Amino acid sequence: MSDRIEIDVLRAELHKTLVLLGEIDGYFREVRSEEIGLRGKTRGAALIVAQILENFYTCLETLFLRISQFFENSLSQGRWHADLLEKMTLNIPGVRIAVISDETYEALSELLRFRHFKRYYFHLDYDWDRLDLLVRKYDAVYPAALKDLASFEDFLTELSREE
Image (cartoon, rainbow, N blue to C red):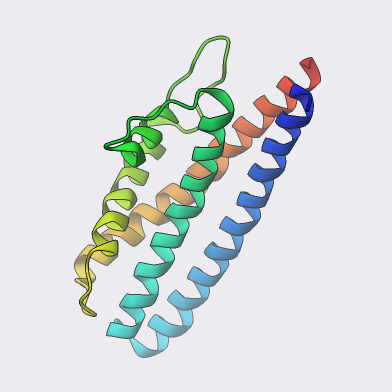
């Protein structure tokens, strides 16, 4: 397969991720206005919010992994999730631009920590103060991530033209 086709495949994966992120965001807005707006901050609402935040981060992380595999593919085994997120902030001259900004990284780091916590937290009660903080992080990071990914998509488009 030519480099151009592989770049186009990565662009298609990025586009698919953007569509999925839009779907996640749309559902999150619906849950926040209908479920939480009508019923309040119930245990059920907390479980839904926690799952949506986990899905959002995992969707982005899957794209980041594909980008890493395409460009550099070297992650530490012991802490590859954190390593992967950190590498997305790197501008690698002659290879690729940074995928996300430092500001986006900071907010996503918080969501990564929460996802790790959630995967090993088996109780059904979540701290709404903590969830409210994570929702604020999400509200800030979602548009920032879209902007960062649009810039990265432009980079891929230009890279495809060069091949």
